[in-house]
Length: 203
Image 1: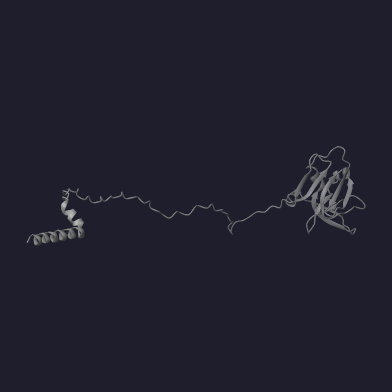
Image 2: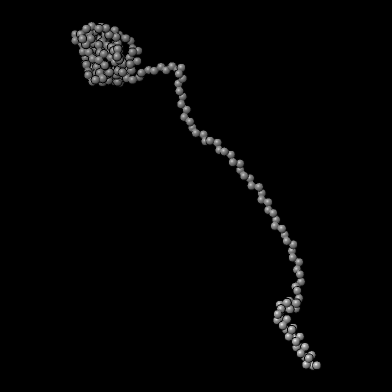
């Protein structure tokens, strides 16, 4: 009887030990008291941050840059232009205080003198032009001057005594139909003619 009780007690002990070995954590958890519940702070919702509206500058299309424009004026078709030829047609140079020159229009505005003289063929012809003495009135001739020469565009020169030309009111630079001047010297037996006179030289 005693052996049976002892055997039963031993078997119970073995079962308890096996159970403890199989689930030791559960036994420990049962043995330790559970911590007291703590009151957690209520969850705070994330605040919504409203950003201030950013003022966006209004973009407008830039106006075109002002480009300087050159303004040229044109003459009306009804405008009347008065053209004056100022190209020197004749000049006096040499032993004068100040050389002088004239355009063809300026010379034609001077008094016209008519004279009859022999032409290059020896025949008497009527000429019209400006008196050489009238041209010489526009310059101051230096005292040492003795002669006067007439030079054309080709470089040819015909010379006379200055004193004789100054005393000859009918010695001319006559107008040519094709332009230019022809030297007309009256009162001499064999006048020296020259066409296309461009310069009077005092020397």
